[in-house]
Structure formats: C-alpha cells, structure tokens
Length: 212
Image (tube, rainbow, N blue to C red):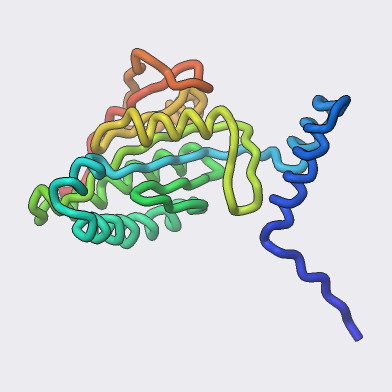
C-alpha cells in the first residue's frame, strides 16, 4: 500500500515562524538564523503594487456598492493581462493588487498593457465609472513565503510608489527596475525628487500608449 504525506499550504509559514521563534531566544545566533531564512525563502522577483486612483474619495461620494463594481471590473479587465505577462497574483486587498514577475521587462510590459486596456475601456464610460490605475514596480532579492506574501526593501518601495505616490495612469519604478528596462522602446524616465525607503532612486516612466 502506498502512503502519501499531505503537506499543507502553510508549511512555509510554519517553518518561518519556527525560525523567528529561535531568533527571539536569548543568546540566539541571529546572523546564522537570518542566513537560514534567506537560504530557504530568498528569491529574486519584480514586484508590482497597483491601486485605484481616487478610490477612498469616490466611496464617500458614490457609495461602496458603486466601487465594489469598480473593483470587480478592474479584476475582470486586468487579471487576464497579468496572466498573459506571466505574472503571479499573490494578493487582492480592497482595490490593490500584489503581483510578482520573474522579469522586470515583463512587469513593465504588463503595466503598460494594463493602462492601454483601461484607456480603451474608459473611453465610453462617465468619469465616475472610469477605472484609473496607479502602479509601482520594484526588483531584487525578496523573501517569498510560498504564494502567501513577499517581504523586502524593494517590496516596501514598490508598495509606497504604487499605493501612495503614483497618480492615475502613472507607472513609478525603483532604480533597480530602471537598470533592467532602460532599453525598452517607446519609454523614457524622469527621476523623482524623493525615493521611498528601501530604494536609492525612483523614476516615473514616461510613455505613450499605442493603438487608437
């Protein structure tokens, strides 16, 4: 008779929690434990955070049900674009996405395509029904805990850029992303006056969307 060991989706989280518990003990060799954590969970990813522009203000004006519709529409329109560009959607929280890509070039290409799709969608919509996206991209070594979450300086920077700094239709990127995508045709980069914590510099992607 064959036996199978069933591993739950929380195995990675459990392992991390045990290592953190060890790290908290008096006299723990934190450097050694930290290296074990990085050996287990350290990976290199491009991280994307998205946010819907004006969401909080719009809820107060039009009501939450109207903006639930906006969230559902954004998922219907944008998740296929993420899949086409080999992105992995880790989280949907309210009006925000957390997505990871192996390649920063695919991450930027996805961001540009997202805004193109929304531009075409918004043409026939009144202002209150338009879906307007803010995007932030980071790239580098992160801790990926299964398909639950990612942690790291570039994660924090991308979150700040996408959810707090970017305006509607803006794509903001860290310096590490820019180094990987500088040769992208049809775009240029403007340095931001202030970079978020965790990034040396940050840039706005200046682009024109193709098509009619």
